[in-house]
Length: 95
Image 1: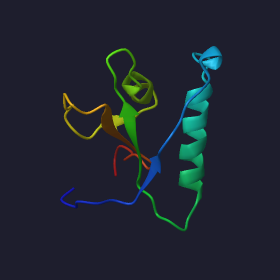
Image 2: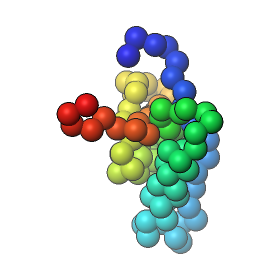
Image 3: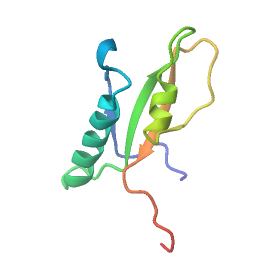
Image 4: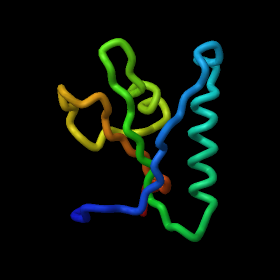
């Protein structure tokens, strides 16, 4: 893990209309992105990354946690986002 950069796919903007939230639509979209990234063979991406919005009265961090993303930085008080990632090809026990 000594590299500074890894092949990754960035989710730039993802939102679900408020009247359709809490119905699994956002999770479905993320899983479709993951599936497509895993199925392609030309880019060799290892991760999906996102800058999860983290404001005083709204945070997407819990949503991305639920979608199996992990933080890859310490929260910064003057930053409105938290850098998060998800491994596309998780290590299987015994590898």
